[in-house]
Amino acid sequence: MATDKPTWTKAKGKSAVGLRLPPLTTDAGKTPTKDWHKITMAQGTDQPAVWSVTWDTTRRDAVPNTATDTTQSAAFERARKFLSLGFVVYSIVDPTGVDSMTEAAINERFKPAR
Image 1: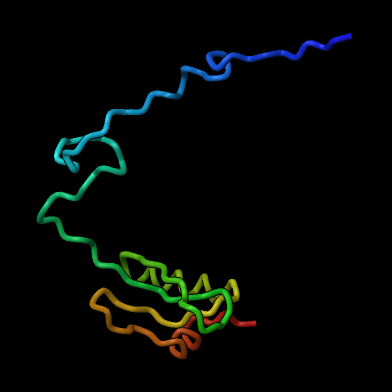
Image 2 (image 1 turned 90 degrees about the vertical axis):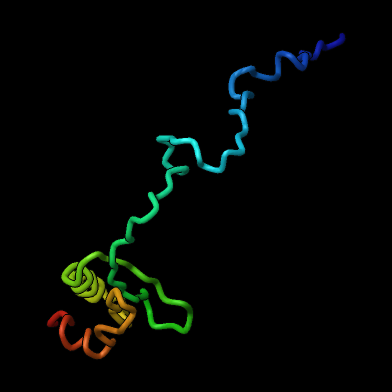
């Protein structure tokens, strides 16, 4: 009693759908496109100034996380939210790169009452 094994040809195992790749281009983004990962900023446009909040979930020596906001009030609100969640907020840095608030000042101003 012989058992017949099903056999598949290579043509049946491959699907024609999905095997086509888009053509490669070498114009390095010179052609205008609506594709989100190829959009480049126009020359002469300024980047918005950002406030940085340096924080971490626990105190450790590793590189801390950094969150950015466009306004001072948004950065302060983010620091307040991080402290209420029990995170460590190390500093708030203004757009020029100067520490606006240190950890001690942040804890004094934004630490939730318990």
